[in-house]
Length: 140
Image (cartoon, rainbow, N blue to C red; front, top):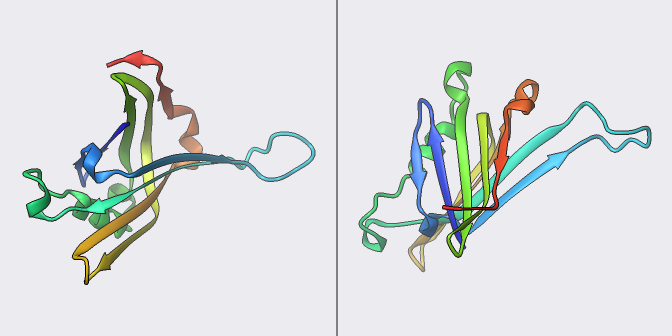
């Protein structure tokens, strides 16, 4: 399965399938017995390797995720994030968060093996949840 990520905004990044091992979305509502809560949050998590120049001819753009994660200026903190999951030429999911911000970002490096990995969790701005786009089930 191929998973592709694109970040558009002040910081931009385009991660190929080799840079993504996990793509997960999550919708959370308060645990009430009275019905669906209005305090909903929607998040997306990606993780994968931080590739060295020797791994690929494509530059590793995870550095731009790290830069985006440290933005505190409101104008720079929000970006459009798109993840596409593809299997056998079919788009299983294409998820777009037009006003995403970073909830958490981490990097880990194994000095002995000479490899690194990243994990980023993004959330759509709460007052703009209706702008999230989820599509899938079509041939690319």
